[in-house]
Image (cartoon, rainbow, N blue to C red; front, side):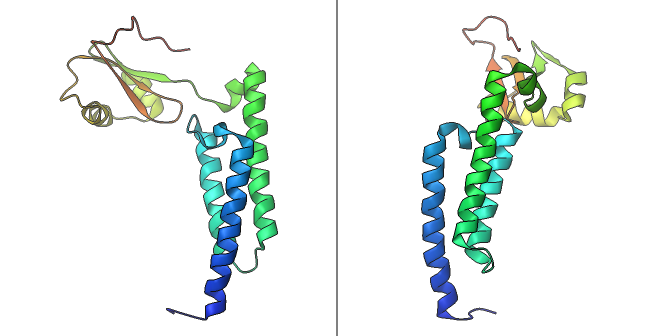
Length: 164
């Protein structure tokens, strides 16, 4: 239960080091966009890469070459998805969500909050996390594409809050 043999540990160290190096090479070749958190697909790819690395490390039936091909496939699919969404507006609309205004000028936008399944207490928590004590002095709160909540203070130099 606590230890089987040294060969297993050696395999993990060797394969882990090489798999990690392969992942770094693939990520460097694919560019910064691969691991951003701009939308749900980005998060899925990041989690899938971590899961693949874990599988390669711990499952003896998965070879290093198979893991490297899996890394390459995930990164290639992510590249194709982002490349297509940048060049074809209908595709972008199909795979990416728009930011959603949840609070504006002292008013909770309850229909938008209901559609996005965000509670008033979650909005208030985001306000507190931004360093503000309460909702007073907040111009707007936006649920971003990546699921984060952006708090825009009333003292912001920007004019009106605009969403696509």
